[in-house]
Image (cartoon, rainbow, N blue to C red):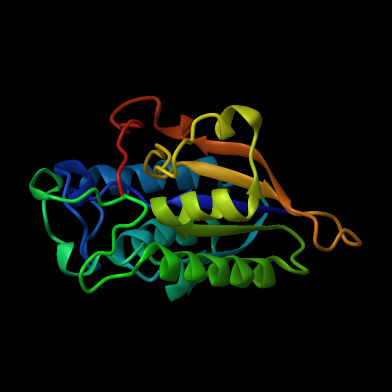
Length: 214
């Protein structure tokens, strides 16, 4: 059994390089990306869908829901890091490094608080996956995926080499990471990643696999 970890589709905030607000929807391109992802996963034995309740993740999950015939289970623990008063600010106007190790956004989450939530999100994911006779799809955000990768997943060597200094990994919109859950009787063993940040479903047409940012 595997967990399919998915980043949401492109939004106007991604496109225009703006720190996103919770209600930011998918752009037209993001909707197309979500549908491409859904078609890629159409024949996979996915049995449940968990998703952040922020609009951009929920809309991405709805594309999967329609294609796979599964309900979307909203999970606030999967929300992106809360940047508080900086939400809605263009990146070009920021005076601080948003991803700096000691940066605490006014009115938002410190890294410590955010990572505590990521840990709780992973516990929720593991509980949802337990006993499934197929795979679990999880739709979330770039920094959540980064946190899960750093704290709870065993990555391929080439993916480990891409990260340095705690900086966010470059993860394309609707990219797919597959984490394989240990078999029964191997409780406590880590989840190993067999596919990391793959966006091959965006390689043709106007899918724009290169979009990144939170």
